[in-house]
Length: 450
Ligand SMILES: [Zn+2]
Image (cartoon, rainbow, N blue to C red):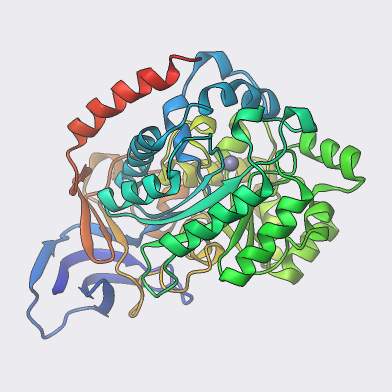
């Protein structure tokens, strides 16, 4: 099936040469970009992209989709991370397959409307008898047509061990490792253009033991999958590891084997210079979540210092309840502004932020087949209409648009693996009204315990 996007005004490729194409066409075949420019072939399907700007699909590298149903709750809005987590574990301990399926659908639908084509999720709450929650997430991704990396997260330290979560949401190391193995065998597809991959992801140093971290790393490396965890999100976490282990958070994780090209941390705010040097040397990667970091008063990541060291950084919205949106276009604008405010002229440009959300995020997830518009890459792109009143006199520089100006409308088109998944802001594969109705019923049940 040969697909042609014709009449494109501009393609911002985000490729290594930072190429921009104008008055052009884009061709897909079997989920792959096969040609850029006019071509002497007849297409099986054509889409009119007159006046549109096309970008590579955005890639979200940290999320907790299950939190979509605990957004904007007045009881927790004024809390910082540790108190916020303690308050919400009481709600999250009632998660089941249905809640996770519906909240994953709702969160990823929002991401897709605003140009996201690949979503990584960090799921770490597995209540007893909760069912196959990773299976529910992959089913949600399949229902929408988005590419997904889901993690089998975990917690084994509860309140009685000095950790934060209640006993009801932690598991033994053995049970966790068995289920990680099952998830990898059942769902992980390592092939090019893979639509689903599994990551092994203990939650954080204050909810996962050293044994769990060490053994998770061994299992992930034997299985050829990536490793992920929260790190250096707050000063409270630093105080915790200094007091419990006599080490700063990065030294503690490094002592457990948690550095390398197969490891990415969420947040990475409170690193010192020598820690950043070691992160660069080891090829360890970072998922940057600026809105969550601002909302939970966690701090500002030293992004210019990381980029100077060529540390791989991707962009993420983080959990639905610590953002509370799931919109990477908003995240790019917020990232641009917070770093301008903090670092002045050392801050990354709008285009550098766009590259974090595309090529950078692809590298964070260990993928070389997504993240740019290039021949041979997966056909994951989104298109916006330049002829809207919002963009009047603002489109001189499409590379820097999302940082400098911001863009706040759903996309005209979103293609994932060559398939049209969003048209004029509407999901193509599912009936959004039905999803909304089912979700409201489940949401009321879920929140009844708060
Ligand atoms: Zn998180």
